[in-house]
Image 1: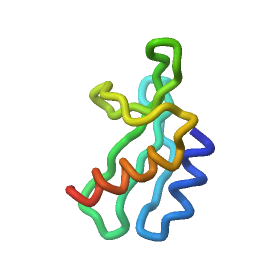
Image 2: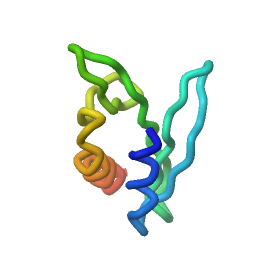
Image 3: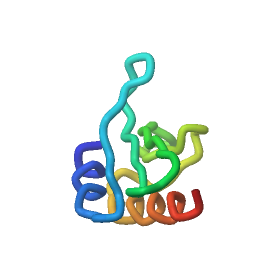
Length: 79
């Protein structure tokens, strides 16, 4: 999550911060001036760690931080 947070912080249109729900950390990401944030978690699926949406859908494997940031930017562009 630290690598994703650092990569998001490099994008001037995005802001983020760590949050916790029932002891599980997540990264809350918002488009500056946007209406609402999205939260990104991590899950171990099929032998690989993935960044995940709150509903459990997979975003990108954790080694693809750039792809995950791109997916977040696209998602937040639609909100």
